[in-house]
Image (cartoon, rainbow, N blue to C red; front, side, top):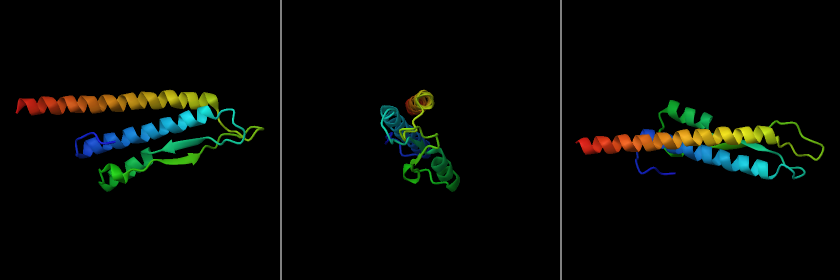
Length: 119
């Protein structure tokens, strides 16, 4: 996702939004397959990659890669390990985080607009 501002903060915000969007998609897939025999739930981690990129001083969005991995939830008799309660909670949490990030993008754009108008 490009936010139209090629600076470090915008890259971090864009990376976080991309990671959260990927997480939301994976959670939706997990929930959609709650009754699918043999389906194994997955989770998304982008925070570790984002933290590592920041520590390296690599502020471009290209340095951040969301990774998916199978969850370690217990497997039921049908081979499915989707925990609907856990996935629902993760969906709410992810949505809240996404809203916070979009608010940060909006606030940043407003501040830049104010700063540009004051010059």
